[in-house]
Image 1: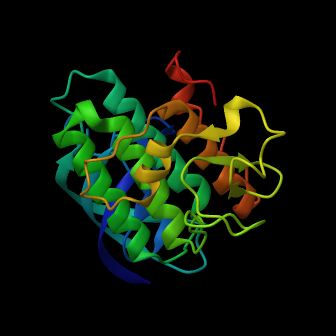
Image 2: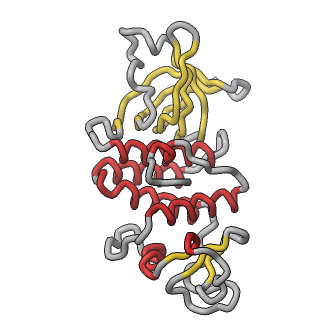
Length: 244
């Protein structure tokens, strides 16, 4: 048995027995793990209140390779995202980010890059809640890059024409030019501004997507297609104006 100290994001927590909790955490050192926090629901517990989703913490826990659930020893809170933020939409997109991580990252998959990316974008959402939709889209784009599934956004894979506007082909998970994608409905078409946004850097605010919902649907489908996993994000279903 070893003692591990690591940064972590709380993904979700469930009650266990009378006073304990089991938390799913995405840690920087060991990827996704489950820990038991004994007595965490007691009024005087030092762990009480720290195991909420969207909390960014430093955790110390006892690790044993033969256990599926590790034992939590201590928590220090680094940041409680959106705790002082009355904008419900930013909380929803923050939860959607965690849900995406939970579905994409395998248990015990070490990936500092995904962890740092998640923390970076949660901090941006918390600091600028009015841009939470765009920040979540940028997170999905960054995630596709980290996972090695970056979009081909310069040329059509069919005819090699330069892409300005484009059409998303859900059958192949590709962006194709407007001429090659004439048979697809308007729901799959991206404007020139959308393509410019996809090509822009994280700090480039000059270009903004025309249709946030369309880009979200496309990116979620794109990740689902390439990872062969359903990313039907329940968090986003709380937003009545987005149909994923």
